Image (tube, rainbow, N blue to C red; front, side, top):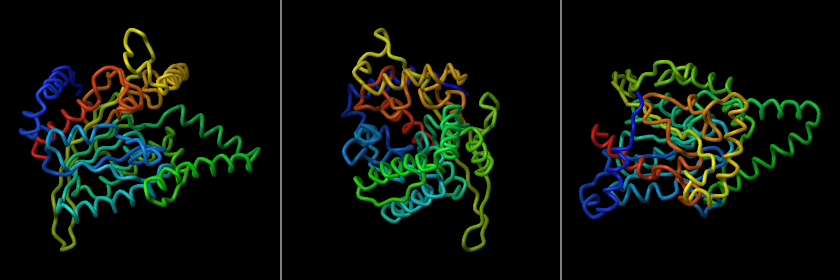
Length: 336
């Protein structure tokens, strides 16, 4: 089910006009903590300086939510590494707050991370939200994987040097955030291919997933698990997604995004992906392929970075912070 968030966006705008009222009312306060998993090459702060989720946790806190966490995970690694790191972060948050469930949000590769966690610990999930996720991979990742394979077979030393450089940059992301993290570039790359993403989807279970991005998708997951005492524990959580439909630079639509240098590169990749048969895309991920569970919207005029309010909040269309704010209230209304 797709929603038009124009009314929600207007509500968010009104909240910004009346920040004192909104904060007092706790519009964004959720029962359970929100934990956000960043994507490939990311960290809590890029090189320890610029927030990945630019301005989003701050906006949620302004409106009453003091339980927003943005841990740093391995920037360039597969989920056999990243999900264990997320598990450790969540256990620390649980020890600090006493929370037994968590609202999980993942962007880009972070969508794999939160889905993997939900498959391992469904009873610990209050809600699952994925944003701009390569849920069904991409032809772009396929092309890069084939190039990697070709170079590796002809010039293995060159391929190894490139991989080492990428992993070093990933390690540097963690190091500048105070962590020394393991990296694994090739596993991360394969995960985003169409074959890798479908293998992942079959492994972690349905949880709102359909191999056909236009097919029916469950908007919630439920089941039972056996706890440490041998008791059956029932669990259930809703599943949401949203994604941009690309934001090619335009003097009529881009607004302040014209000042964002990343918009030029993502405009080029947007058109390249369309020529490659991806259809509508956010410059990195096919729009259709990012759908999971209940689709809040796949029509935002956003690039892949706009989805997390980057760079520096220079984004077109509705303010991404408003979409996060309205989503927090959506969770609040469900007692989550």
